[in-house]
Amino acid sequence: MIAEKITFIVGLVLILLVLLPVSGTVNIISPRDVVFLGENDLDLTSFIQEPINIGNFPLGEQGYSLFEAGEIPSEEEEPVDVERITDPEKFWLIPDVFFGLTGDWYSWEGEKLGDLLFILKEPSLSLKVWDNTANKEIKDQEIPQGHLIDFIIETNMWSVSDR
Image (cartoon, rainbow, N blue to C red):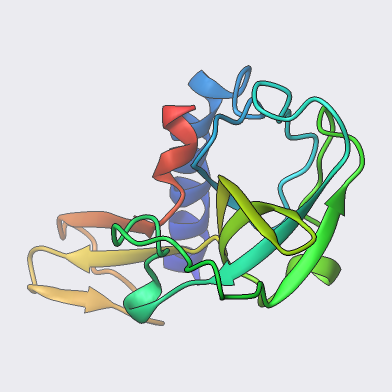
């Protein structure tokens, strides 16, 4: 029980330490940035000045976007979904609307593919506790006093710190 609380508190502190230094500018998006489901108040005005339609082309094998794999959709391909950005200054990736639509989002003018605007991914975060003394991962058990431990954070959200 104590190990679970310690794990939670240390994980929360580590996440805050990573995200707080860049919290002032994380909402300003550049073209081709990775964004995450649920992000809100995103500022897209550096490349979108008026309301536009956007089309989704899903992630390929192993979760890579077409753009990251060095590909772009062909002229014959249709997006799997089309949405409208009405306010590029305060854009919200509403989970109810964008759930399951990860991948490349391009400007979409009827049947014409435009520029890649952003890459949408679902955020992931896991925290593991590794007991160095016993050389094993700790799961639902107490850590003996005096054992050296490491906290392993696995996430796909590091790109936020590059904004």
